[in-house]
Every structure is written in structure tokens, then in C-alpha cells.
Amino acid sequence: TLAGGIYSMLMITIERYVSTTRYKTYESSGRSLGVALSAVQLTLSGAFYYLIIYFYDLNRIYARCNVVSEEGLLFHRIQGGLLTCVQLFSITAFYSLLRYNKRLLDTRGLSLTERYQLSENVRTLHLLVPVVSSHISLNLLVVISYLESLGFLHLHSVIVPCILYLRYRRELYAQQRLRRANATDDAGFSERHITIVQSAW
Image 1 (cartoon, helix red, strand yellow):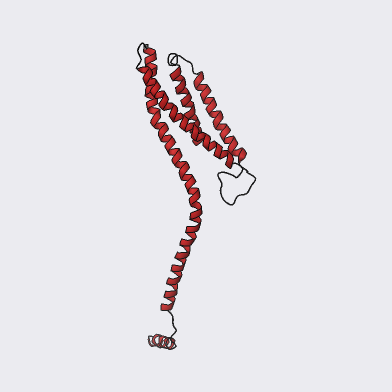
Image 2 (cartoon, rainbow, N blue to C red; image 1 turned 90 degrees about the horizontal axis):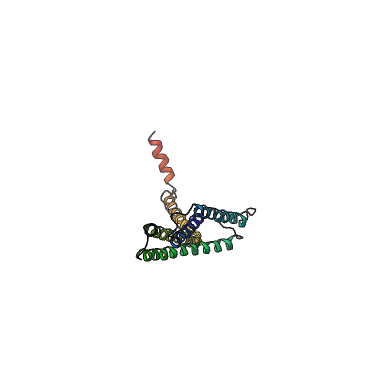
């Protein structure tokens, strides 16, 4: 989901920060950091969905399907702003960490283990930067499209009835012309029609 993906991106940012600041001992460190970050990510995602259900008024009857209720609108605005800030923080942190790791890699006196860890940091960040950039771009595109579609719904509710009305008027005029073409207003038409039919017997 969107929130889970963004929170996982935040956890990756924290993990890359730790690998950069502790590059001398990161390779020999245990798995406690990964377990802790996974637990935090799951907790944040679970809390997000709990708040969605908590702020959604399930007892109210709506005339249409609503993703967000009136009571939860403020929460979703705050949550949307928070998720946007997290994404911007992640992409900024990745660029900063990439430059910092490159600068450290150019220094002399590094051991083989330290140089290997810094090279891995640079290689991993080179892969993560375009992934995070595309993730942010797609999320912003979806949000903008969704907001624009909400504004378009009001215009859509006006345009569609007008189009249907014009089509109905056009079909009505066509039917009226057809009726006039097939009309039998001539008084002698019925008698001539009956005479022709009887002569064919």
C-alpha cells in the first residue's frame, strides 16, 4: 500500500544512514537493526490503518461510496502532508548520503573492509535514488490526478446531462421527421390504399 511503501522507504533511509555513519563496523554488526526497523515499519503501518478506521464514521449512511468521511478529512490531510514530507526527506537524505559516501571513498588510509562497505553504500544508493525518485513522482502524480478528478466530478455532473439532453432532442427531431414523412393526412389516401389492396386479391 501507499503508506506502507513510504514508511518502508523511511526505514531504508535510516538503515542507509546507519551504514554510512558506522561504515567501519557495519559489516560485522548483528541483525538487531533490521528487526527493529521492520517492527517500527509494521507498527507505523498498523497505526495508520487503525486511525483510518477510527476516524471513519461507519454508522453514517452515505449516498455514494466515500473513501474519506467528513470526520476523517482533517486526519487524511495531516497524514498526506506527513507522507509527502517523508518522501521528500528520503530523497534528500539519499542524495546527501551518496555524496558523503563518495567523498569518504576518495580518502586515503581506509582498510579493505571500510572501502568495501563504502563501495557497497555507493552502489546501493545509486540504485535507490532513481527508485525513490520514480516512487515520489508517481505518488505525486496519483495525488494530483485524484484531486483534479474531484474537481472534474462537479463539471462532469453538468456536462453529461447537457450531452444526454442534446442527444435526446436530436433523436426526438429525427422521430418527428419520420412521423411526418409517414403521415396519412390526405383524405383519399386510405380509399386508394384499400382499392389497391383489394385489386391484388
